[in-house]
Image 1: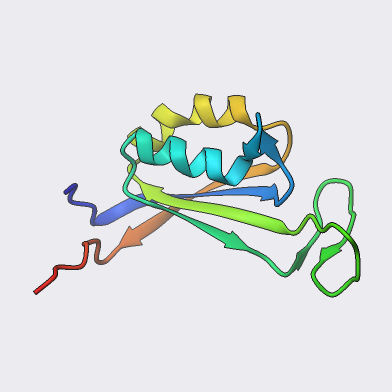
Image 2: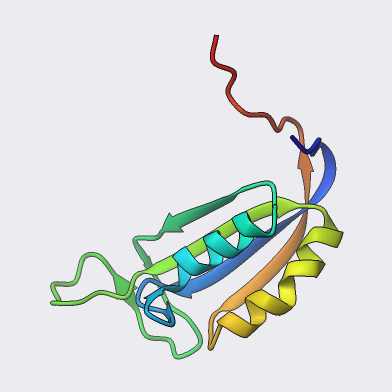
Length: 114
């Protein structure tokens, strides 16, 4: 297991729930890419409301047949590993937004089964 403590990078990828990469949801394709490339981990967060570049308000409170709720894919790893995977991520996205910020990792470990 990679030792991941101290100053690292938090990458957030903001997309829509209905965004796709080929025939699968974009968030699933991104998580699979991050896993395959060996990044420390990724989390997908389904949001309850938000708006983006076109100022269209998306919420789970409006009754519609289909929703396009905001989704955030978060990953924390080293700057070098984030930089290495960024071209592949960029090639998968048609829209959305990616942010990077410094994060201090206090603890990173897997659950030990005792």
